Length: 84
Image (tube, rainbow, N blue to C red):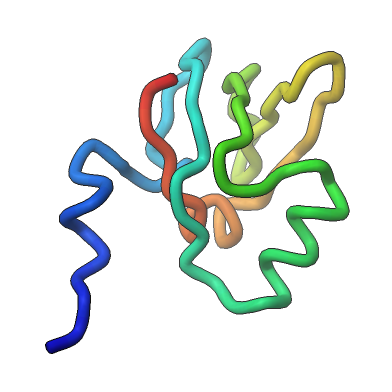
């Protein structure tokens, strides 16, 4: 029987739904290897901690340590996070 994605991370939600000021941890990436590689090149992966700095149009600006990154809404919808 196939595993469900929801049971291990029942508190998780898409990054695109996060509010400004929230401290979060990445728990799952719903995209393929292209998304994983792109995020890894930006310094983000599963278990990365980040904070929502602000939302600008269709982008979300996140902080990881001293680095600020803008993530588009399409990519943000494929990143599942939970409160840190």
